[in-house]
Length: 235
Image (tube, rainbow, N blue to C red):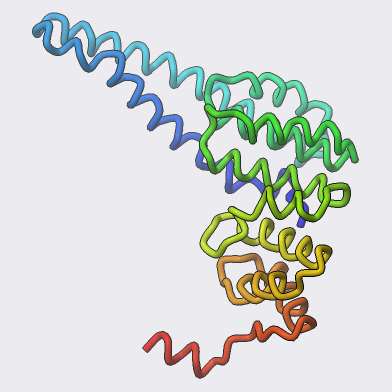
């Protein structure tokens, strides 16, 4: 279930788009009210907005290059060379770059068997109210995965129960950990229901679905959808 830095690339591709939306919102908040002061002030605001946006794009471009450069270092096996870049990006005012840097630093710590260090970084993201909830939920899932062997089963359930539902982006990882925790708590019925739901959810990674199907079967829960029934649902 471990998520390596390289596997998170699709998650980080959204960073630039989010930054563009944030810039436009900030520009309106900063300059929108100036329109009532007349044409001169409007023109001044537009000129200022163009300059400000250009400066922001230059800065965002630099940070984007730094992030890509850090990923290139990791791909080339130069993890130590990537660390300073991630350290700098972890202090960025951009939530996308900051989250990407902190999450990747945490994943690198996991690979280095530094569970304590990784947990601190995941916790930092999970507790940051300025970050989008998707980033925080991902950090919570990764934090729980890193601590899974040492956490009490009920603690895992309490922490991830809200994410262990079909339709949630992190259902695969969160659902599997919650189901396993239910087994440790001697609650096979609850575990079986989640394993069956995971097995039938085509949005969940194939590896998780395969394990879930086997686990559900061992608990006496039918997790294999009948092809004929599936065809009837489509009709």
